[in-house]
Amino acid sequence: MKVRRGKFSGGIGNEVYVNTKQGQVVRSRPRRKPHPTNDRVRVRTSLGNVASVWCTLSNQRFAAWAAAAKKEGMPAYQFFCQINGTLAAYGQPLALDPPKRERFGPNPVQALEIRNQRGVTTLWVKVSRAPAQFTFVFGVRGCSRGISVPRSNGVLLGRLPQPVQGWCEITDLYANKFSLPKPGTRVFIWTCQVINGRKDARKLTYADVPPPEQ
Image (cartoon, rainbow, N blue to C red; front, side, top):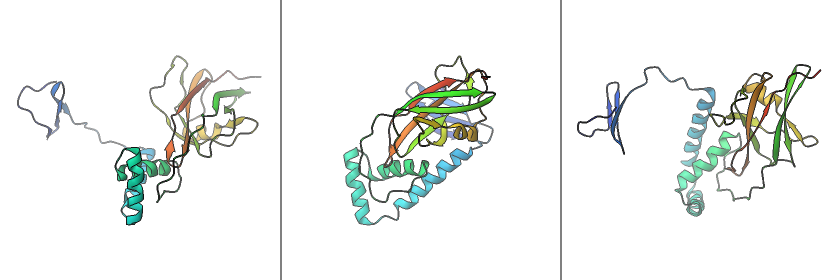
């Protein structure tokens, strides 16, 4: 609801006041304590480590990051955190010097295929060529076939394995994060290439889990 009295921004007790374009708005603080997931804790820890590394750089490295950040149109610290936050999130070593920009090739992922042979479900990704050295897979839990667009962007499942005859099996990646999807459900995955701390746009693909083949 809107508050008609004088403008105020901040908290009073269990109420939080915010000034917006539509006027002043008040909302209640959430009563239950947040329960951060393991993934969120990992991200916060990684970002904290990145920030601490920034303070240890030499003046020469500060200058190098400032010059590289100027080309990107952002402050040096923000650029350092962007590059190294991405590297840390994907389990790669931090870059103390600004890495050179490399051109991304087209994402080679063509389709997701789910097989169900005698009740054993496996997930496969078809690729047109070997993916970039660091290509990562994101996914969501199996959902209704009536859903055409997932509500979230998925969670990190892991690194896309090297292909064998044009196919990468991601059964274990998916099962380690979620249970294997049931027949009649739909699975969405995204793939993303990462080079030198930069990443391209995620590519979405999906497939339905078929009934068991005899």
